[in-house]
Amino acid sequence: MVLEGFFALFSNILLFTAKLDNSNSFPHPLSPEKEQEYLEKFRKTGDMEARNILVKHNLRLVVFIAKKYVNYPDNDELISVGTLGLIKAINTFNSEKGSQLATYASRCIENEILMTMRSYKKRAQDISIYDSVGCDKEGNELSIIELLQTDEESVYEKLDCEFLKKTIGNLMKKYLTEREQNIITMRFGLETDEPKTQQAVADKLKISRSYISRIEKKALMKLKKGIEAEHIQF
Image (cartoon, rainbow, N blue to C red; front, side, top):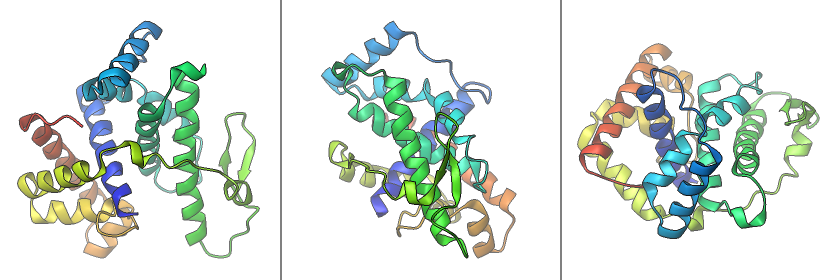
């Protein structure tokens, strides 16, 4: 759905911000005490800054999981998708059920990545439902037929969807050039249900992939600064 592109874009802004703020390395995990403190603050008061801190300090988990899927052509895209899964996990995590955040988040992250892998495989030519698309946490190979049996819960009901769409849309119009808006829109499928890889966008605009990457990073930085300037909390 189109809305998912907005969440993917938001997750990229968080991901890109974490890299920039930490000299291209991700923050270390929080201590159990600090993690519980931020979880309680977010759960009880809806403090979005607490949620964003939890996201940033769990990005290493996203990267670790995404790197397992070596047969996908765009690892950065998998990290982006995995970050979206992490945001979903933090929004829906309930510590009273006895599981750890990292355990629950791992499942959500892998679900998002596996769905992307499934979509990629569907677009490929001459595929078999028994083709391997990666490995699970135990190192066992996963096939398409196994992914088709994955049961994913819808969690978008718990998010303020319309607010996010309107806010991101206004930020793009205010802070990005027309070309940057066009590239971000295509990359994250904001007007369709088909996000495009950097290479696909490059082919469409007849420019290099590296140039698309530079424009995308510049646009994400502008959106990050726009969020800070407008004092927006998601």
